[in-house]
Image (cartoon, rainbow, N blue to C red; front, side, top):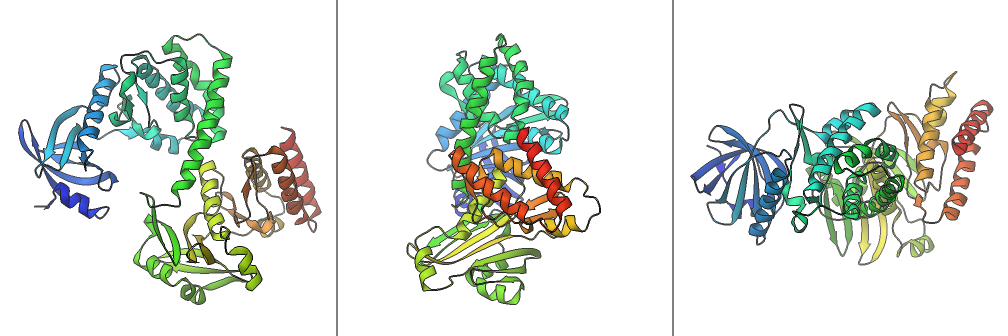
Length: 481
C-alpha cells in the first residue's frame, strides 16, 4: 500500500512529493483509488499532473488545488470539450471528481501509452524535411482549431502528441473560451501562430514560409505574401517579449530555479543542481575555491575547477581589487549577475555558450560586494590551441564564424572576444566569459561594438598568418551573404 495523500498534504509538501502515492477521488460512479507513478508537472499549491493507474487502467490526472480550483477545472473541461467539438483528437476525459478531503478537484484522462510528444520528435529531427513534417502536422491542426474559434494561449510543441500516426492536442486549460463558435479573425490567427513560432530559434523562421501554406489551405485563404510578412514580423515581436520573460524568470523562484535573497546576499541555482553539497558550497564558496584547482588567480577574478555532487564545475569569483574599485562596483549589477543573464540569453537564442549552474552575490542591503558565477566545465582546448595544432582545420573555423554570425544577427557584442574565449568542444565551439556581453538596441551601437570584437579576435591570430587570412575571408564571405 502506497502513501495516501490528501489535498492539504500535497499543498504542504510543495515540491517534495515522493512517488508512488495514492489519491482517493470521489466521482459520480463512486470513489476511485488512483496510484500516481510519475509526476508530469507540478505547480506547488496550484496544480499537479501525474500519470498512474486507476482500476487497472492507465490514466493521466490533473489535480487542481487552492482557492481557484473550481475555476481552473471548469476552464480545463470547457477547453477539452471545445477541442473535441472542433473534430480535433484529444485524450478522452473519462471522469471528473474531488479529492476525498474536499480541497482538490480532479480530471481523469485516458493515457496514450504509445504517444510521442512533438517536442521530443523535434529534438530528434536532423533534416529540414523532418522538421517541415512536424510543423505541417501542427499547422493543419491549428487551422482546424481556428476554424472552430479556438485560440490557444499557451501553444507549443509539448501540447501535441503523435499516436499511431495521428496528432492529439492536449491542454484544454490554454483555450481562450470567449472566442468559441466564432471564426477567428485573420489578425487573431496570426497572433496565435506567432505565439507558436516565437518559441523556435530565429534561424528556424525560414521554415515558416514552407509550412504556412498548409494552414492557409485549410482556412481557404488565398496565398498572400504580405500576410506571410506580417506573420514573420509578429513572430519577431513575440519572441522579443518571450525573451524578456525568459530572462526575468532566471532570477526568481520557479520550477527550474531555486532562489534565495536576504539583506546579506542573493543566490540562484538550477534546481536540478541544488544538492546538499551545492548548498554547503553556497553557504561558504571561498572554502571550495581554496581547495579546488586554480585556473586563474588575478586581481579582478579568481577561477577554480571544483567537483560538486560528482560534477565538474567552474567557479569564477569576481574580486574587489581595492576600495576605489569597490566603490565603483558596489551599486552596479555584478559581473556574476551579467554572466548569469547573458548565459541564459545565449541559451534562449540557441547560441552555444557556457552552461550556467548558479550565481551568488554577497550584499549589504542594496550594496553588492564579492560575487560568484558557477558554470559547467567544458573539457576542451581553446581555439588557438585547437587550430594551431592542426595541419588542416576540418570545419572548426567555419563553425566559429557561424557562431559569430548568429551573434551578429541577434545584435550581440562580446566585449572581450579573445580566441581563448572559444572552447572547441566535440559538438562545436562554445563561447565563454560573458560578463561584458551586451545586446544592442541600436544597429549603429552594435556595429561599432561588434567591429571592435572582430578586430580583437583577428589580433589573436597574427602569429598564424594562414589562419588569420582564412578567418578574414570567411568573415567577409559571411558578411556579404
